[in-house]
Image (cartoon, rainbow, N blue to C red; front, side, top):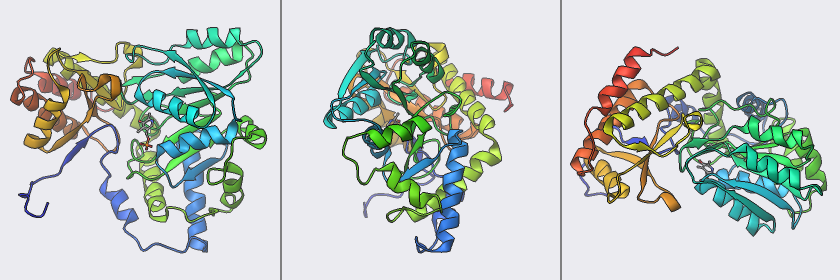
Length: 394
Ligand SMILES: *Cc1c(COP(=O)(O)O)cnc(C)c1O
């Protein structure tokens, strides 16, 4: 890159994670690394472990791993299940299918309820499957709260209800990686047994941390579960965590950033954070509609506040459009994943994000559509601006 010309201005990182890391978080991490066995570390440890409980909205312990989200997916499974156990997954998109594949590699029997990748997980087929499972062979139900490939949210409380109604003892495991800190999420109230989170999306941190929020039932299951676990073992973590320490070297500087990010979310107020994301989702969909393009998610109730996946007209390549936008306007947009490759581009509007950043983002998309020759009507940015101006932050 030494001979590449300088690109002025800030890169627009509008993929649905990793997200823009705010300066406050960058500065909080820009510190000498401290002794992870010393007293100063223990107070940081206690602060972030308790703080993550307030973000997941749980009174139960949260485990923090120095790993990307995939590590916390694995941790959720190996701590609670035994070889050959059956898990029920709903294939809402690319991430649900990756989690299912990971379960298969661990020696679990993963069952899939398919969807068209254009809506959240429907509760009715989950309920039907659990009602017919009289022998309780399904040991866990795995749901992705915000599917980051099609841009659809699942109603987690509605998936919990059939488990309770059918009196089924399966654990409920939920991936909140792209919803935590951007879309309303309630671990305790919704009766989730293991919630899986990651640092690089709504939490506004660089990649490298991931989380398991637990329930009492999940902890009890972990004592009987027979899948091999060593590095991921909750019980090995929870002992030292009680006094703020970790059983191995933690990602100290990311934890400095996490403490800052948790403070920032509470300074804004979690409900205000969720309202901001929902409002930016609405503004983005108004832009898409004005362009005459189609939002991939078909169910209004399932629209995502953290990203919008936009379909390009047949015969046009979403990746060519993204390349034009990156080259001309220094903005990264998310690509279509697996089944949706080339068919959609994804606008991330989560994390540390404002009205003006959204208007800039949508401006880049609208100019890119013109530059790449993708048929559309102008006026999307104007529609989003009219909405944002007329609907002030609550
Ligand atoms: C980003 C994402 C993941 C992947 O996590 P990694 O940090 O890349 O391991 C998993 N699930 C969802 C819903 C995601 O958005």
